[in-house]
Image (cartoon, rainbow, N blue to C red):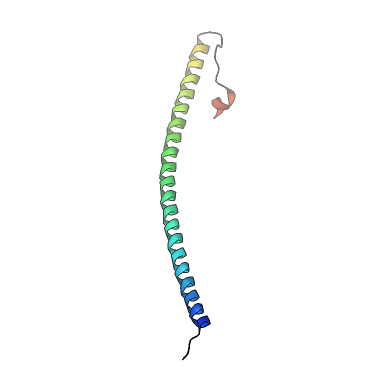
Length: 92
């Protein structure tokens, strides 16, 4: 069997393509792994931020409730209304 230069070049080109495809697959797999790690990290941070927002919301609710009680006490003592809780906060 006699292989000429064109056949050798074709075989080498095919081997090069196979090598490059495998190299690209490895790089893509590495990138996917890195992205999955970033997603896990962001999900963890999102949970922490959600907890902080819940704490802030709870504290804000307590502040609104105490301010409403204070307004009620001042109103019963006949004091003029110096401060008043804004409507959207009072109803929420």
